[in-house]
Length: 406
Ligand code: SAH
Ligand code: SF4
Image (cartoon, rainbow, N blue to C red; front, side):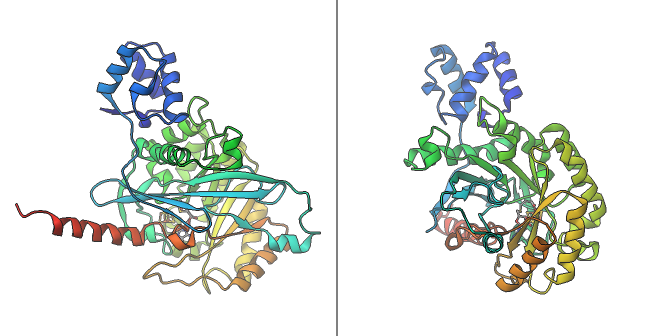
């Protein structure tokens, strides 16, 4: 059975030509799959009955099975998917409204959470009373079960690498979120305007997307394709820890908005926090960002910077960051560290994060602080794996215990 959600537009064309069908059938079926979220060829009523029957015997249309589906008090919703062999990955849906013209209003949600603008607000006249709000529904998607890159502060990294997700498993997360939210009767302003529940995608879940390039690129093509999800390139953001050669390939193949996990402003510290830096040091990484920019949908790169108490939150770190931001047109997104069991770091105190932001803003660097969403369901960045893995192990143990003796 061919998993249809895993075929990018060119792949779907070839699939239908091989079936002896006209290529326009591929576009028709793509709309059924990715816009109406059909899971059964029998429902594709504008196809000839014979075609539908042939499809039914030849394809599968499914997201990975859902193990758990949790909604937080703030509306954030998290799905835990079973990807086999005791592995699970997560997707997080974040509904939000942003003020038009605020630093967050760039039409491409850069983070797995909303950002806080109060520091900027205190320096200006405050929000205009009639400022309108732009609403969006963001899905944070996983690209791998586990991750081999072993960043010191990341629970996915701690888990080690299990395997790459297939294109169908990556696209399946978006397909499932849209389909489920619609089936549940989602009430959101953008859905009332006829758009799909998910308006923005961020590749910021589990795994390093550029380490699973061959499966991630077809997924990105589907996110952008007009006969599939039809998202603009600025509404699709890929976050990488800095696989330099792959950043260049992405620029050539499918240049979506780019977020780079910086986390340190010099090589000595970054070598420790983000070990891939030993292979591709800062100078190389920043040069790759500059090469990417002419292809990017926006005129800046987003730098993510996790705030670790006493580690990377000193005034000198802020000053070095200013120098980096002068070199590479960028926006900085400070992420308060999200703790997980066994983590060796603490989050920087709130006041220090604010002061750090202020130093950067005073130097003219647009800097936002990521607001943690879905706290009560462990949906925050870097928390998506540790507890999951434990639960899966426990689940499997229960299953084994419950299995009848052979
Ligand atoms: N592998 C990619 C994308 C997934 S991680 C990358 O590293 O960019 C998405 C973001 O969450 C990255 O910036 C990552 O560094 C950050 N992150 C990881 N663990 C975290 C934690 N415990 N607290 C806060 N942010 C974390
Ligand atoms: Fe992998 Fe990103 Fe976690 Fe680093 S931060 S271990 S690259 S998922």
